[in-house]
Length: 276
Image 1 (cartoon, rainbow, N blue to C red):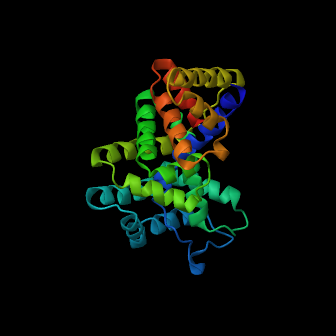
Image 2: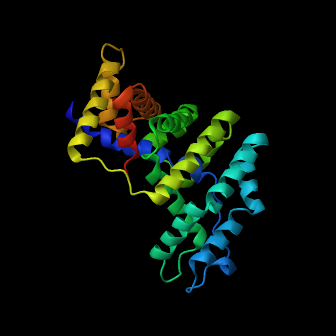
Image 3: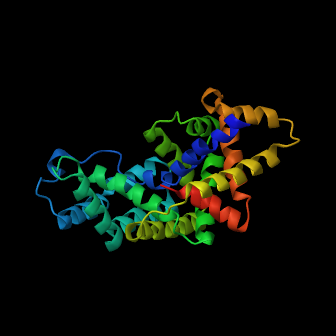
């Protein structure tokens, strides 16, 4: 049982990665042109203005169409990127972080802003009320369940490149029903605002151990008496050696088990998934 339990932290880190994927698919795949690179003496206001221009260009919409967005979902995705990157609270935070990490002006603003946005959303998810937190992860669960088995297995085994991961997830997101995508984007924006104004959520080592144990026990309960229980335990213990089908099944079982928890146990588990 020891190796199985030790994989929980890896599984948790994998699922936390999914928090960023729908956001990742919304960004320009290409870097800024040389003439667009910020000057060494760039100011916060310069960065905010540049972000507003970058994330409202037509190429943004072209990339989303390439990934399968169309109709109302295309309009929602385009508006969401613009809404987040022009939100005063979020844009101000991102500009401050870009300046802090890039004092010599060598990092393109697009790259710095892109990475910082993923971080600020991830930082804010744990502050969401349980209802929104649960919905957020239900969408992430839907994305994982809808992925082709090969891509799903590669995600769980951490073998899919960031670009392929982003594209694979975006193609699933593009097929979400419009009300679900709209609700998800509302929660995502709120998470970004919370991440820009509050410190990261923390959890003591003792609490982490307690929550991990509850998830572990819930997984064992799900597997007890099943025909593939022993095989699934072996998969969890050696994910790096598992085939894609087995790894995908393990990842889907993990998030399904977490989402089946109730009340305080569910809240604690989702907070654990949301830790920086």
